[in-house]
Structure formats: structure tokens, C-alpha cells
Image (tube, rainbow, N blue to C red; front, top):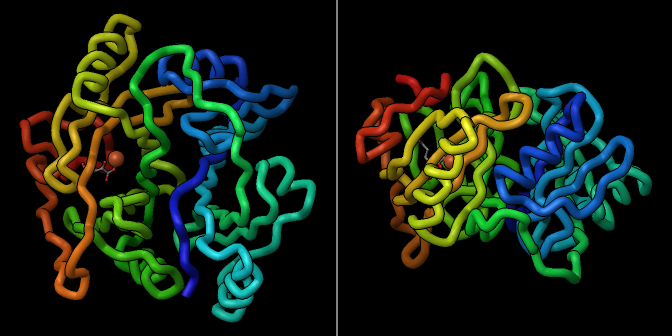
Length: 286
Ligand SMILES: O=C/C=C/C(C(=O)O)=C(/O)C(=O)O
Ligand SMILES: [Fe+2]
């Protein structure tokens, strides 16, 4: 069993680093902390970064989690290798690029690239955004899956992942008490379906909703409220058509875990939004 602690960062290929920087700083409210000819690092908390754009193919996505016990990284790789999962050890140069001490990578059964990180670097500096969106940190990703049941079984077999709720066949998974760090949404493709940043309060979501509209940003869902995590949300389309979400979900699964039963929500619009907002997102349509 590989014990993960939390989601740490995403890596996104782009052919336009300048556009990514403009969108993420001026619209999303992330802080650019480092920019080279082929890299852009953006932060949303005390961690060195939450998003790294690299010069590459749009759609080339990676999601990283940090491992609870850094000494178990080798054992994690051995477990994945012996199960025949495509995986490998990151080089020292690749670790430096990620601002971590060490990492391994693997592909989930859909083909999503996942990295498991040991000893990620803290910044020693506060997150100081250029736009006050109220962001408190990277919350979760929606990850595309070509077979939700198969990929759920994979995550439950190898990791400390637990199902918090389902929408249709799609599980919302947690590796710590927060309601979810990853949701697997059925799709024809691999890659990140949306990137969630947590914000402090509903006011931040509504202020952003007005702000995004004033900037002609395409709102693709919300404002609304998820019955699953209980969070208020707004989703919008960003650079390279990547979808971003702000939400203020504060549901934690704690207490009598033995008897916790994940709730099954039907694949129906009310399971995505209890206020009646309709998503304009392929994977959220029933
Ligand atoms: O609309 C479905 C998504 C639900 C939630 C939630 O409960 O917060 C997400 O944000 C998600 O799974 O991405
Ligand atoms: Fe989400």
C-alpha cells in the first residue's frame, strides 16, 4: 500500500508560456515565482509551486502527490513495478526541475502520468498573488478516465485512496480527510479535466464570477453548489482550454471511518449542482 499525503502540483505542456503566465496571474490569481525560457512556475500556497507549465504539447498533463513517508519511495516503485504498472524513477535533474528531493512516476490504466514526490521544497515565502482571488491552495483535480470502475480499482488497490462519493460510476477519491483530492470523470481522453483551487469563502467565488465576466472569460459551470463536497463553485475556461474551478469545499470525512458509506449520486444535473446551474463541460453531462 502506497500512502499518499496530498495533491502537490500539476504540470501542463503549452506552446505559449507568455499566455499561460498572463492568464494564471491576471485572471486565476496565481503568483509567478520562476520563469525560464521553457518553464513557468506558479504558486498558490507555501509550497514552491502548484502549477508548472513547460514548453511542450498542450494536453501533456501530469498530476503529483506527495508520499507520507519519504523513506517509502523506493518501496512504492518496487510495488508498482511488480504489479506491471509502467513506472520509473525520476533523475536528479528531473527532481531539480520539480523542486523536490526525489520522485517516481507511473501511468494509471487510462494513461495519465502521475508523479509521487518525496520531500517537496517549501518556498520560505508566502503566496502573494497579483489578484486577490481568495485562493488558499490547490484543492484537487478532475482526472479523465476511460473506465471509471477499472481506474477506481487501481487507485484503491495500490494506494490509500478511499471513495468519498460517486456521481454515476465516477468516484471522488481522498487520500486524507478532505473530501477529495482527485475525481475520476468518464471521458474518451486522458488528461486533466479541471484544476481546482480552494478559496476562502463564497464571497470570493461570487466576486470572481463578476470579475471573470468583466474580463470576457468563458464561465463553463456555476456559480453553484456541489451536493458532494458541499462546496460553492464556479468553473471557467483558461489557457489552452484547461478548465479551472474555484470552490470553498470544507467537507472532511472524519470520525467513524469503519462505518462511513460513500454516497451514490445519480448521473443527473442535480448531482453536479444543487442550485440548478447546468455545466457546459463534456464530462459533466449525463
Ligand atoms: O460536479 C461534480 C463535482 C463535484 C465536486 C465537489 O463535490 O466538490 C468537485 O469539485 C469535483 O469533483 O471536482
Ligand atoms: Fe472540482
